[in-house]
Amino acid sequence: MPAAHDNDELTRVGPGTVMGGLMRQYWIPACLSSELEPGGDPMRLMLLGEQLIAFRDREGRVGIMDHRCPHRCASLFFGRAEGDGLRCVYHGWKFDADGRCLDMPNLPPEQDFKHRIHAKAYKTAERGGLIWTYMGPRAEAPPLPDIESLALPESERVVRCHQRECNWLQALEGDIDTSHFGFLHLGGLQAESVAADSIHRFNLIDRAPRYHVTDAPWGTMYAAYRPAEEGQLYYRFSHFIFPFVTLPPDGTFTDHIQSGVWVPMDDTHTMVFTFFWTKRTPALRTLKDGSPIPGCVSPMEYLPRGTGWYDRWRLTANSSNDYLIDRAIQRDGTFSGLDGLVAQDQAVTESMGVIVDRSLEHLSPSDRMIAMTRRRLMSAAQALRDKGMVPPGVDDPEVFRKARGGAFVVPEGADWREAYDEHLSRSVGPLLRAAE
Image 1 (tube, rainbow, N blue to C red):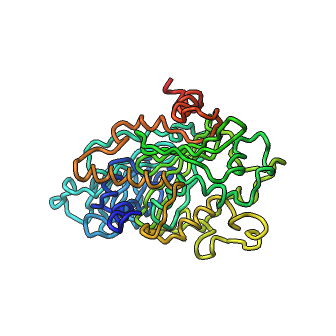
Image 2 (cartoon, helix red, strand yellow):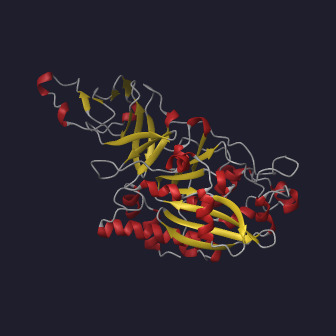
Image 3 (tube, helix red, strand yellow):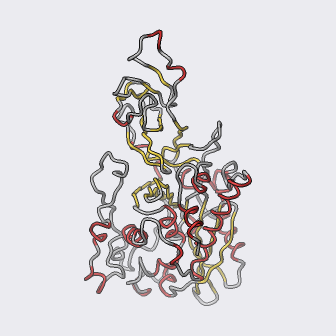
């Protein structure tokens, strides 16, 4: 269990923090590309504890900058979108997407000094249906991340997002904790209720897996394993990818392209972007008669969108209404009484507090992946701070290509890493095809 000082270093992401310094080495997802219309209204954006505004000019260029006008610090959220930039309504100063001041109309020409004024602006790029920004110290930004889900064609990609009102790390850790799946999500389901030919039924036959956990060039990885048919083992692989990406195991390995991106808005709010490949084999979501597993499949419903720092992608089921828990269904139907995997995860991670006090934890062998990931994050962040060591994948994002989550069955006694590599070589997906 981390000491209070270590827990602070793990969780705090603002300017000048150890973990914030690590994250600023990477490109950071800011929002969906679809959230910014050409010439549309600027949007408040909270990212790594910084209050920013985002806008798209009429030519389609995206600007992400400090929300304070560099003149008198009035918020550029109230700015007017005009052609190639954004004009502050206080005195009319205008800025382009790079932060350059284009116009100072409240000054006579001989007093104009716009060439010396820049708003604090960050580099931007678009990939995978997201707008990314580089908030780090380099004059030249590193390459964009090279993760399978980002390479999916738009026609084969689904991206969903929601806001979680807790620290980024405790939110992320739920995605690398495989044993909760058989309780929180499927605790009310028995193996005989699902198709007999589904390899994922072994989740329900044995809800106490054993683990292999290791460091990897991209972060950390685990293989949770259980008995399958006689002489076989059922493996579920999951990964943590620097600085805050997870590849969950809930699918069939060969075509399971899915990722979670857990972006810290600040220390106590997280924006979650989830990618799915539409051509993947469906995970365990239906009973053997084809009907949905109760409580497992439900649409994500959102509160009305507002213009505040935290008014985007908030779920209707939230702490104010106890995530719409149904105690009758909990007693006689689903294990949790909560409807949908997202609401189930949201309830338990937010219930820990906005930043969990990890000194109260009693970790068990099932938490080895979580413990190793914390150590890996702290080691990389401290090495950057103390020795200037560049974190994994910043300059060589191609290392992320070898990470794939999902499940398969192999003969008992097979080497788990060799089995992983062999199944990866037979897997399908756009990055793997491109790498051949």
